[in-house]
Length: 263
Image (cartoon, rainbow, N blue to C red; front, side, top):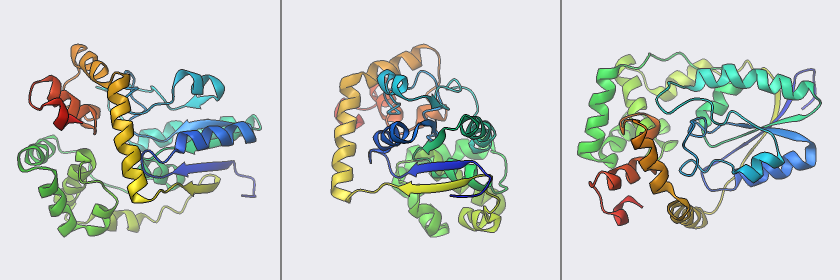
């Protein structure tokens, strides 16, 4: 990773692959500090459902970019980059190793080389697509995205309402496939030198881990955490409240789904 730029380790991969544990082990071995790159862990009051590192882990190794904004505040990849880059420089200036860890590929890609130009959100179109998603079901809109942009669809889980609807929104606003827009950008101007690891597991083992994590989140208090968010006045329509886990538990709390269906 030579050169005069800061030297960074990046750990990515799907949820439940053990990224946090690997990052902490590396940070202990290399005298590093961890920078979160999970788009949900930036929100305050959302700890259990985002699998945020616990107090013991955060006491062991300095963590950054956690609990940055409230659930009703706007946050995106561009803001993430503007906040994370100075942290990388600061950590490196102390002689420590910045370790970026998270499953949000867009945040990592943006951090490494900027963000491709895409249209601002269209609130009316976004509401329309969100309504279609809820009424027609996740698979219906996901299949539409697969037809339009199979490359983008391959990188998005069918249940990821936010990313599925945003990809369709970009296509409808620009007439261009999101994957083509991203490819056109190039992402070449990297402000640091990095070594990137992507963690993967056998599909069966990964799904088993995800299922166990879901059960553990319920046992640790995800229902109470979600109920408190609603009691604080955070709308179920907010972007973070639409995330996997919170959206399902909210429907249970509001009486729309039985608990078995929510989990």
